[in-house]
Image (cartoon, rainbow, N blue to C red; front, side, top):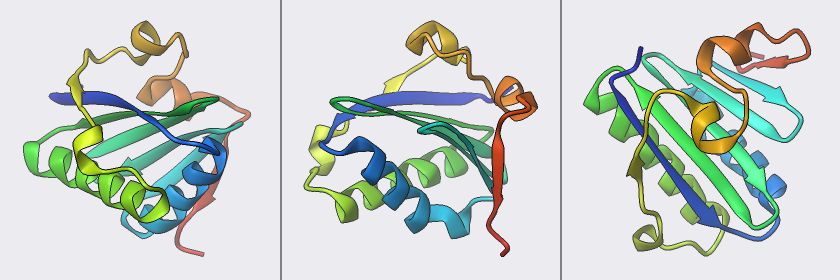
Amino acid sequence: MYKHVAETFVAVVQAPSITEKICTQIGEFCRSILCEGPDRFLSFEDGWVVILPADDGLFFRVSARDLVTFYGIRTLIEGSLSNSTSVSDDVIKWLQADEDLSRSTGHALTQSGLAKRARLRTRSLST
């Protein structure tokens, strides 16, 4: 279980394109990136982020074991958003969330559930 969990929704145009840019920019910091359609699950040493593109923006959910990792992942997301689109940092409002992603989004995505899905494609960042 991760102790620190927060989520945010950021209005952007061309959400799938912005998602790919974010994954490219912060990919070297991740252990892996799992893909299911347009959704992305980025795994870090002691945390993860789920990115769910929507018609009108991007939903982010960050979870981490410790505060340093928690804020580090959030900083990577915010910096990448600033580089990819015209979103200012004061527009991004992180809200505390519970551990179950499916309750807040309607998506059946959890850290263990997403990793177990057979149809996921894993892209190794070491290649």
